[in-house]
Amino acid sequence: MTRIAIILGSTRPGRNGEAVARWVHEIAAARGDADFELVDIAEYRLPHLDEAAPPSLGQYAHEHTKAWAAKIASFDGYVFVTPEYNHSTSGALKNAIDFLYGEWNDKAAGFVSYGSAGGTRAVEHLRLVMGELQVADVRNQVALSLFTDFTDFATFTPAERHTAAVEALLDQVIAWSRALASLRTDAKEVVRRNTERVQSGGDFALFEELFADDFVDHTPQPGTTPDKDGVRVLYHALRSAFPDFSAKIHWQTVDGDVVTTYKTYSGTHRGEFLGLAATGEHVEFETVDAMRVVDGRITEHWGVANLYSVLQQVGALK
Ligand SMILES: Cc1cc2nc3c(=O)[nH]c(=O)nc-3n(C[C@H](O)[C@H](O)[C@H](O)COP(=O)(O)O)c2cc1C
Image 1 (cartoon, protein in one colour):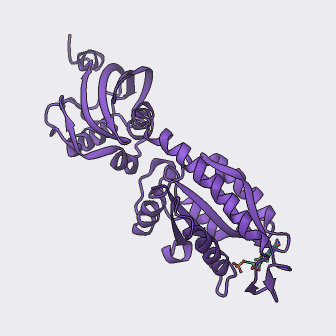
Image 2: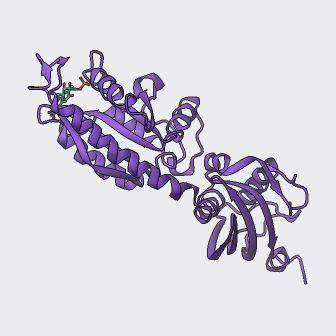
């Protein structure tokens, strides 16, 4: 079932946002065409962004980031409930969004906002942020006025017409969340993300997501086990031997659920590799490999890499 988070984006004591988010969740939960969960950013107690590595690498050091990343990764789409502070969203919501990257990608989002002008300026800012995070934001939105949808600016008393607006917003978020789910599980796309984001980018949080726990490697490299642990060890070894390790995909073909990829790896030899101490040489080598992808996860691998040419390039073969 499609999973949608209703993200409560204000943390202020006495916040109006809580009543708004609960109201959205209540309307959503009565639908039955998706699973909805209210996610309160306050519960994650995120400090100001304190991760050293860019979020796009997915190398999270802190438990609070890992918990937040696991929660956000578990959804197909989001409804952000945002206040308007100084013509933008809350700093707390922007900070919580900034903590992550890959967890948001290729998903859908909609907005419920509130403020003296319906919070619309906060949503316009959030739409710019969504673009950078590769989140598809739907057109419909719900704009609640502090003057007409709250009594004394503090007790939430929404006009009746907003219920239909929430339903229309959810219709769009669910439809786009479903459509984008197929992009995330497309076999070629899964292998491309592994090559570009894990192998080239060092995103090991994504590695954990992309490889099935019962993964089998039919052609493990010498010294590595034929399982998920073995690939993790190999990928780390490649990144420490070649810190700028990157891959260029030339072509991919799909046969059923097996994706075959021809690519060239390159990097600078700065650490031990195949028992050879760092030479500082820039090396390039071709690989052809096949990966079986089931339900968006890599379950099997067969591959040949031209390691002979690596030995030549680092001067180990005369
Ligand atoms: C720091 C701050 C700045 C605000 N700036 C705006 C604003 O620019 N435009 C607006 O319509 N309302 C503004 N407001 C009013 C809020 O939208 C309103 O207080 C709302 O209830 C805040 O959400 P919360 O109660 O969930 O924290 C601001 C409120 C705060 C606390």
